[in-house]
Length: 153
View 1 (tube, rainbow, N blue to C red):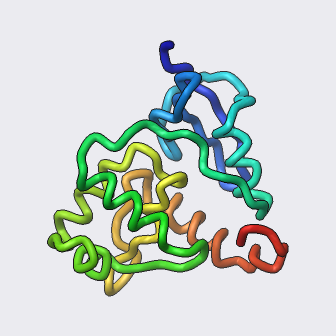
View 2: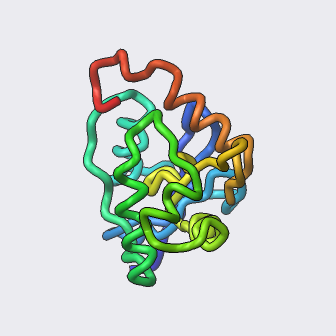
C-alpha cells in the first residue's frame, strides 16, 4: 500500500505524517506536505492521547534502517516524559560521540513518537531537525504539569 499523508491539529501546531496502512513512515512538525487527510488511525489516536495526557501504546512505526537507529530509538524511549538528557549522556550510553549522536537524532524520521526533542546540549537547547520553536514547545508542554492529569504523564 502506498503512503497517504494525514494531518493532526495539535495544541502546539499542525502535525502531518505518512501512514501506509500498517505503520507510520514519517512525521513532519514544521514543514511537510501542504495537504493531507484528517487521520483516523493509530497515529492519530496516539497523538490525541499524548496531547490529552492519556496512556496509549505507540502506533506501529517503520522499521529502523540500521541497528544503531534501533538502539537509539530504544534509548530515546527510555527517557521519561517531561525529562531530558544531553547529547553527551546519550552518546556515552550508546558508545558513540556526541556529534555523531546529534547527526543521528537529526535524521530521526519519527519525531515526537521517538522523542528526540528530549535531548539537549550540555549548555543549552541544542538543535532539532523540526526547528527550535517546536523543540521549545514540546519541552514546555511536557514540563507544564500535564502529569497532574493522572494519565500517562
